[in-house]
Amino acid sequence: MQVTLTQVNRYTTKQDGTPLTFPDKQTGQPKAYTSIRIKCQEYGDKVLSGFGGQWNANWAPGMKVDIEYSEKPGTDRNGNAVTYYNFRKPNQLAALEQRVIKIEQHLGLQATPIAPQTPQAPPQTPPQQVDTVEYPEEEEITPDQIPF
Image (cartoon, rainbow, N blue to C red; front, side, top):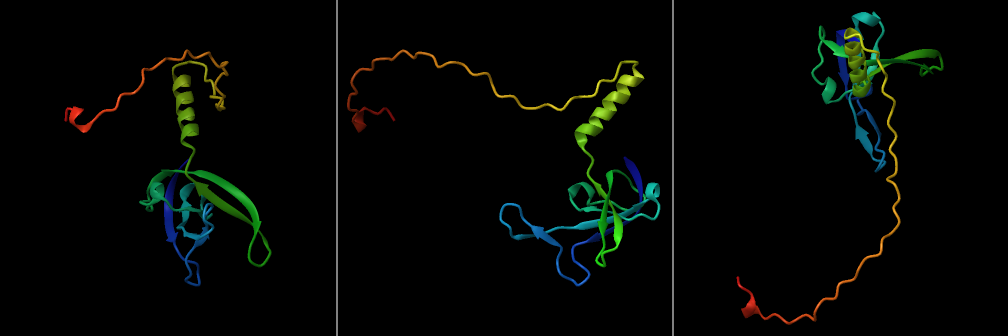
């Protein structure tokens, strides 16, 4: 969904000044990240949270950007029920599919959603008999026989 940004804030540290980190999946070591909080015209005063990356590094108020929006129920530090508003990078394949559907509709064609592809194992072929080749006995090659 395309939204118009009204506010963009980036954070790399917590309120106490310590870096924002999460455990790396492979090493388990802390890995730093950037948190982005945005407001946009389409959602009014709601603050949407997401992760920083190259795809949103240059965002500024007034820009129109594509995001995928979600809501998640949770609890705050005091145990009160809250709703978290999140955004993430849109699924590019889903966006492409929507564009194709719009084109097909414009051309009067029947829009056909693309089914997700699942990888299939290659067909099994039975082992074949391999002919053996008889090679002559190896001769010893001396350095003076090498042409270079």
